[in-house]
Length: 113
Image 1 (tube, helix red, strand yellow):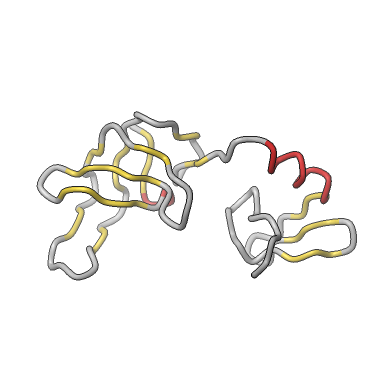
Image 2 (tube, helix red, strand yellow):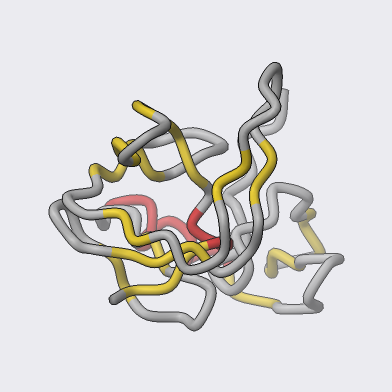
């Protein structure tokens, strides 16, 4: 299990050490190890698909059709979701969608309303 920080630019978990720097192979972002230590002390920022910072209680709009695993339902483009909660993990948003129920969403598939 790796204890390397995720990329601050694209949130990729596939970072690696390169001398005194961390490097992201997906977006080629490099940052110093000292900055990573300071960033770990700060609260994690969650950003939407357009780079806007998200907070608990925000309203977001889905920007892509999302198929639900184990179901024939689909969350359509343009679906508005209110009162989101930010959580740690692979899916960063907990929410409740009308007609579907409680869900977890990835921030890369929403935009702030």
